[in-house]
Length: 238
Image (cartoon, rainbow, N blue to C red):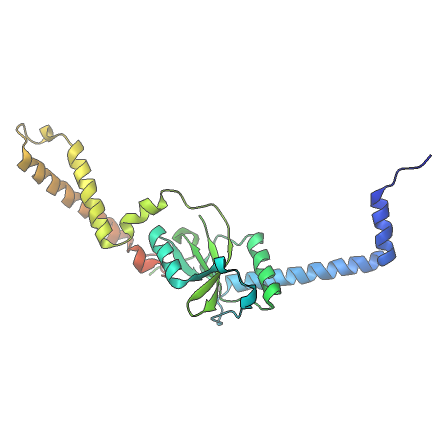
């Protein structure tokens, strides 16, 4: 006896009472146009160099877990061999989530964010010739606000793999250990029939010089440097 209620039609009735179809189309078009304009402005801020140095946040609205000092960022970059540069050097493209986070912060703090910084591996940067980005906005006094993180996490062994490049002492220690390992697996019978401790030491010294020479040649040929020297360098061969 009673027909079922079509909630889509009921919803349409409620909307028609509030606003006509042309007005709703104009309203939606205006909102999307404003959103697209904001998106273009944010992308422009991310991909172009800015003259402004700091952003004036409303400190009552900040989240403490997103605030980092330059020393913390430097330590992270040195440990994992990452770069901390202006966002316009980033070539990986910015996801919609990052743009949405920027827009949300701008609306919340009533500001236009500028001069973004980003932490990422060198291969994701458009570096001048001389897997896991973090987008920051400077706050002043060497403090930075983490806006968004995207992409995959770093390889679990990246810290270990980048440890030799941290400083000169680490590199020498790595070459020393690698030389001992190679000495232990190379049969002494390849060189002499009566091998003793003296021959083992001579073989170790020969292998150490060989490995050190290869490392030095690779470093000079590729223009490589230690993590502490390149963490904020914009040059590829640094």
